[in-house]
Amino acid sequence: MLKAAPILHFSAMVDDLDRTVAFYGDAFGFTPSLPPTDLGDAFARMVGVSGVSARLAQLTHADRPETLEFVACPGRLGAAAEAIPLAHVAFCVPDLDAALDAARAAGAEVLGEVVAFSEGRSAYCREPGGSVFELEELYE
Image 1 (cartoon, helix red, strand yellow):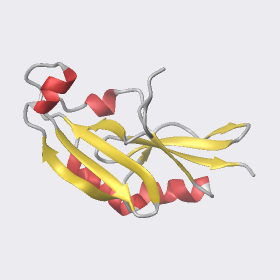
Image 2 (cartoon, one colour; image 1 turned 90 degrees about the vertical axis):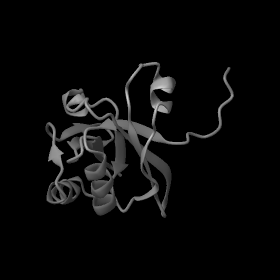
Image 3 (cartoon, helix red, strand yellow; image 1 turned 120 degrees about the vertical axis):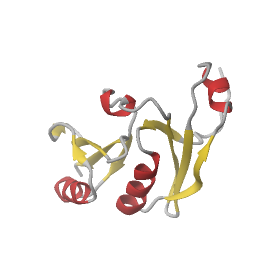
Image 4 (tube, helix red, strand yellow; image 1 turned 45 degrees about the vertical axis):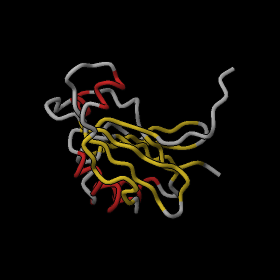
């Protein structure tokens, strides 16, 4: 078995890194722990795709343990918007309808419909920069 420490960060591809950083700051209160940074050729070497470049930002929150990381690859616009939203971060909210209203007001788009499960209700949203997040209300 592979010994691993706690998860360091969640990462997703976006089409507009600056809009993503602004959205997660305005909507959820995350701040850059690593501001948008050009990775030079390090990204191409890490992913094994010659010639690809990337900008990366990492966001943290004073009240939350997780780190969100977002990567934008210039010249590959639409990659995030066209993807089925499997890579996402989920936030637990006390009132899904109110959270969806706030997300829309901050510029997010609800992707499908609110779906009820035995443990609660959830919906997927895409923020203006292209990343996807889920809002989930758990039943008590």
